[in-house]
Amino acid sequence: MTLAEPGWGQAADEALAEAMERNPDRLLTLAEDVIAGYGGPEGLTAVGIADYIALERAAARAGAMRKLLALDLDNDWSP
Image (cartoon, rainbow, N blue to C red; front, side):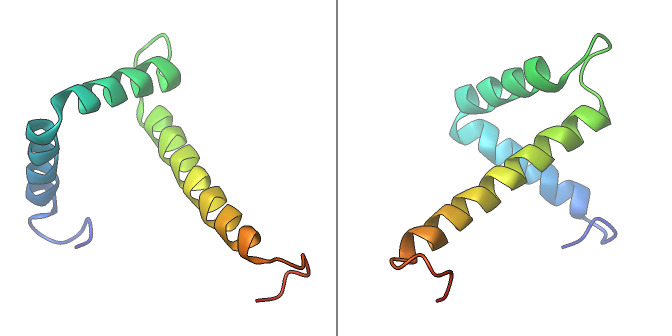
């Protein structure tokens, strides 16, 4: 589903509600961390959210790369 498809907002709302029901403390902690770490004097902005998402994606890429490098036993960068 893409942002342009009808119902995307509803699906996102349902996913958020489900996450809140499953583990509200975890979601609250995440929200506090994002606001404290990426919010400015005016609060959390779209730019702050984009920065957070970019950092999370970079961490995921680094984790995947770390796993691949661990498999390269002779350190020649070949599969």
